[in-house]
Image (cartoon, rainbow, N blue to C red):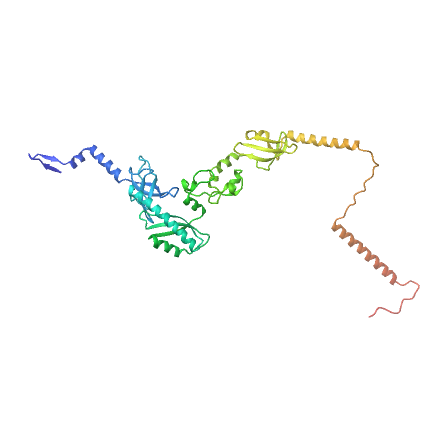
Length: 394
């Protein structure tokens, strides 16, 4: 746009000059990009909670900053944990990712601290009401939004509990609307926080976001004591940290023989009674000697062989030992006092059950034949006597 000076000479406005000047144009573009470009950031509403994603202007939010985000229970104070690099390419923002409300200031942080103290008071009141009404319910934790009118209450109960009267009493007294959510033992430990037998803060409350599946096999693979007090956490479940080194233990076990496996060594046959996975040693109890042998893992291929495939030297040594035992037994028999030789009776061959049945059947048939012949010989008349006039009955 041109303007006239006092002398009538036309002049060019600053906006027009910026369009003609490339440097000014690039500077304006960079400023506009820094202000308008949105990136996806990760936030947490409390330590070790799930990471939720929101969008924020690039270059204005960094890890460790506090922002205000709007969630289902209202505005909440959150801490930024993940931010893309400044030189990372811009990607489109997903539709389900909402923008942050604002960068948190000192007033927001003070308000969040006040609501945290108020949540503790509501929690104590709820616990008292649960005991008074004998509900069998234990309130674990309460979290309120920045305005303090809505929040979430976690509780533990073995069975279904009707807590409506208790909830109405607490909500009316503190003018708040609470969403009741049941928590298991692990979630309770995460919400309450604490320290475990290692002396460190609970992993689930400090940095771990998901609970791993821990089975008793994990403890057995690491040769740990199966005493529940030794392998259980404050939640009463198996320690989550048992899974941290499980893969390393399985890899280090490698081809080590199992406990109870029969093996052969240059010192004789034996059985594996102990494994030291970290030191890579196998303890073997020998059959012919009370001594226990510790064999390093790098010598197992040479010093230890499984009983399924013993070496030829061991086979020959076993044969020599058996022959020596036979010679020693012969010498002991020769040195014993002589006694009259007694011929042992020939072993009676015990017929089988089927043979006995056949023998009894044949004997019975022979007896029947003999009885029949005797009856016929008695009934037949002599040749000098006349036949009887009485014939068979008709």
